Structure formats: structure tokens, C-alpha cells
Image (cartoon, rainbow, N blue to C red; front, side, top):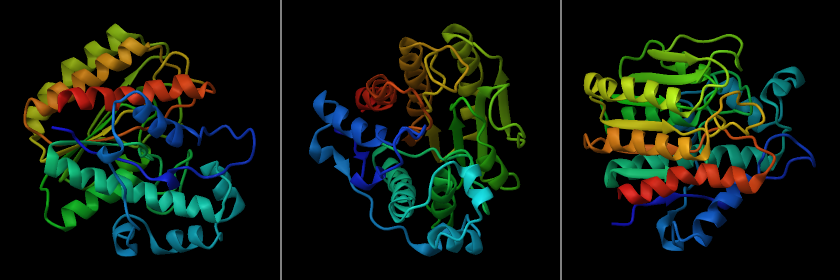
Length: 300
């Protein structure tokens, strides 16, 4: 069976030359998956427009309106770290829609991966750390609203704690948040999650994978989720500009196998998003992100 992937050309938008966010990775990842035969053109599903009421189940109306109309105060926009443009508005909405579509397809096929997503620093009323809307939170809230799922587990393996996600679901028993992140990294102020593991700087493959393997299977058995969202950030890699962990390419591959084996062997649907990754070498960065899709294709 060929599992679906989700992509949209508008995941990419223009940023000023030299901007530190690697916006080109979304377009390059799609091209890489096609070029390497990991996916064919017919394997990709394209998300449609994001309905306003879907967004407002997670984000506050004044914030949504201010972002759309370029009315966010400059200081607040500096906290996000991206310059406003109409293209950025379109890109942000379609990326959230993409994660919602990914979740819907995961429920149908058992497994689906986006070529974007993982904006876990976004709060209901403000953005932060390159994150404007919280795509996983929006998708989870919408699926719950529609009655498609009862319980959900978010596995967040980005090197940074998903403080926005933790805050959004802090009093929601239907969503369990699990995070492994660097103890000394962004954000400075942490939000309490359901199960957080903070590992020291320079953590390597063996220690990281042993920690994950010790916790995840039991966590899946205890929570028995109807759906898993997996934020597969590759900023844990040793060559990432801002990560501070020391995982190798091999470690990333083993991590994806461990997660998918643990989740899919229990018959739980998994919706994967790519999360963070900030290497200036776009080719190397895309190859790291593609491990999510390579391994997902094997598990089909």
C-alpha cells in the first residue's frame, strides 16, 4: 500500500535574503522525495483553505485578525522572528490546513506525513520562535470537535520544548503531551507538560534513543490514544545551528524507526510533521527531514 503524504507549493514563501529561517526546505523536501523515488506525484495530497472557525477553536480572534491585517505590534512580531507579508499569511494558513489533512489521512490509512508543520511555540494569543499558529493543536482540537477521536498523544521530539502546545492542552485530559528536549535551549520559560524529559547539551545517539525506548512503549500502553501526532524535529542533529544535541544521521533514522514501530505495532494511527531544522546546508537539512518519510514508506 502506498501511504499518502501532504504537501502544498504555498508552504514556501519569500523571506528577505539572508534570513535565518530556512524557508526553502519545504519546497526542497518535496523535490527530494520525488527525485529519490520515496514518493510519486500521485502520493501527495494537497490541503485546501483553512476555515476560520477551525482556527478559532485554538487561537484568539483578536490575534488571528491582527495577524491577517498586519496589525501585530512590532515587538510581538520580533518575537515570532518572521517579517509579515501577504504570502506569509497564506503560507501559515495552508500549513495548518496541511497538518489537519495529515491527521485525517492518518486516521484513514494508519499513517501519513506532512512536508511541513510542527509550529509548537505558538500560543492562543501570540506567536513565538518562527511559529504563528499551532498546527498540531488546531488539528487536534478540530478532530476532537468532530468526534473523530477521543484521546490523542503528542510525541514532540524537536530539540526545543513545545511550550505553546503544552500551554494549550494544560487542562485538556483528551490530549497527552510527551516531549524530549534540551535542558538548556529555547524557550527560557518552560510550560509544564504531561511527560517532559530534559536531556543535557551534547546528548548523543545511544543515550537519546535509550531514553526514548525506555519511556515511549509504556506511555503508549498507558494512554491508549486514538491518534498520535509526531513532531519529528531534526534540530537534534549535531550539525544543526541552534540545536545543541549531538545526534547523527544514523541516530535520526533509528529514532524514526523506534517511534513508528512503537506506534504502528499497536495499531495506532500516526500523523507526522517535520518540526524544526536550521542547518544552513539545505541539502543536508532536507536529507534529515526526509528520514520521516523514508521510514514511513517502509512501514506502509
